[in-house]
Image (cartoon, rainbow, N blue to C red):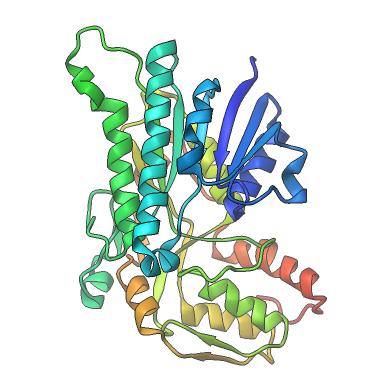
Length: 343
C-alpha cells in the first residue's frame, strides 16, 4: 500500500498526541503536525515535519503538500471560548474553513478526494432546561441543535461547512459530471478522559479532576452539582473511533456527522468511585454558575446507533472497564498510591 500523507492540527493536545502515536504504530503514514506549541518529546520523532504557529496564518504553506487525510483537532475549547468569544470564532471557524478550502482545492485539482476528519462535540446540543434534559435522555444527531456556548455554535457551524464543501460547493451536485469533492467526516465526542495527561480545566473535566485529587490526598470542590449527568469516553476509544471513521468505506456512510459515546454517569457517581478507590478522599460540591449552566445544556446521553450500524462503532471501555482497567491503575502509578478497595 502506498504511503499516505497526513496532517494533524492541534497535535500537541491530548487527542493529537494519542492520534499521532496510533498512526505511527500503524505504519504507512507520513505524518506532518501543526500546533501553536513545539512538539513534546513523546511524539517528536514520529512527525516528519512540525509547523509551529497560528494555523489561520500558516494555511497557505500547506497548499504545496499532497495530503490524503487531514485531522483537524486544533480548537479553542468550551470554557476558554466563553471568555474570548471573538478569538474562539477566529480559531474554530476561520481555521476550519481555511482547511476545508485547501482540501476542496486539492481534491478538485488533482481529482483525488482528500479526507477531512473533524472532531465535533456534544456542545452542539442545547437543552432548554433540566426537565427537558432529563425527559429526553439520549438524543439523535438532528435533535436539539441549539447550542448555548460559542464553542458549540462554532462546532455546529463547522459541521455544516464540511457538509457544504463535500456536497454543494459551487452547486456541483447539479453537474452531470461533477468534479471530485473532498470527503468530510465528523464525530461528536462526549467528555474525553485520558489516563496519561492531567486535566486542563475543561468543562467536562470535573470527573478526572476529582480522581486525580483523591489519589493525591487533596480535597476537591466539584464545580457542578452532584446530579449532573453527561456522557464520557476513554481516550483510547476516541482514537479508535477516529481511525474507524477514517477507514470506513464511503458507500457505508449514510451521513457526514455521527454521534459516538461510551458511558454516561453523574458527578455523584464519580465521587462514589473516588471514595471506593481512595476512602480518605475529601470531595464536596460547590457549583460554579457559569460552568454548571454549560453542562446543564448538554444532553445526558446521545444515541450513536447510526455509527454502530454504518461503520461498526463499539467502545472497548464501558464504565467498569474504564475505571478498573484504564484510569485508576494509571493514576495510582502516577502518584505512587497503594491500591485500595476494588471498584
